[in-house]
Image 1 (spheres, rainbow, N blue to C red):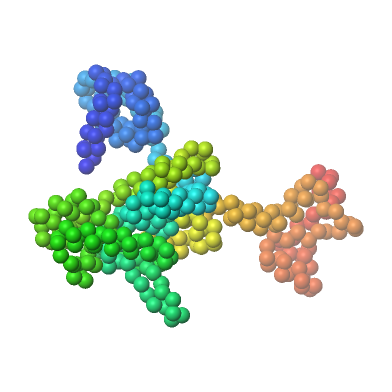
Image 2 (cartoon, one colour):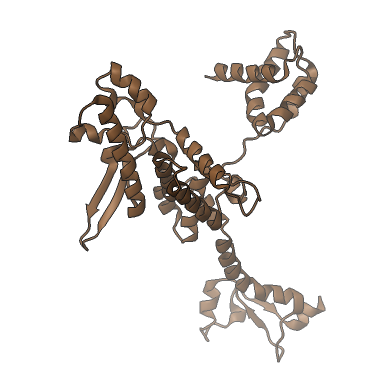
Length: 378
């Protein structure tokens, strides 16, 4: 895999520049062409090119090696686009998110957005699930539960991904009835397509195995040669349908970001960021956010709570109240009507001891005599 990566990046360099000799100028030109992808490419190529020069083979100049050794190729920390509130890669604002949902509703209503695109766009926008998970949904994964109060709860049983070495697991996720009805329509459409392809009605078991999002072209081919085609992963739609659907919505509706003034850059990843940020703003903790985003741990969910403006304000309010007195000492001194030792206590223990008349403050090891004359004399 590592060798394939080296070959792929070398092919990319050669196809872009067609160099006869690799020196620092070639690498700088390649860096300019690759832009944001350059660090990742150089991380792969650097040890290979340095070793190439070290072995004395022709084709590479020492200036290229010197440049490679001094390049800063640090991997960008995950979550930076969230922490920096990046207007093109970070979470959408509430206004952008609302505009996106309004746009997809309108596009579907006027017939420029297919049912399949509408269904997967709604699921991404309102659940934050990965496209890889959503395209694995089957007809049987659409659930209903009758509640004690007479109401019906709609759920989807979402396959979990990124669970290495484990049997495929599922997690039930509640969805609102309006979204459930659209997804059910899409599932019914997929079942009808399979039945028309086979020329027969499916029984309940096989109906349950039909993917909600079908790869119709592959299905037509497999149905001819494989009687067990419903068990094949090939008939699932590709995860790329999610990005395609979002781009279709944005372009047809000419959806403009109020932050950039350009077409909104809506991606499945940004929608996940958005859902997580909304949850954090509503006061949910890292554990809850991790569960709702289907993370196995909280290691990557703390970023959503870390830099919220509301959290910063609450911290600032709590801290400033405690520090305002100390700041006032250094700015103005302590104003007292009569000269006496000021009881400055540096721990909760001291605060409690202040109430004990038999143990005066000036006998406490934490007591610091601070008087306006002493402060102002400085």
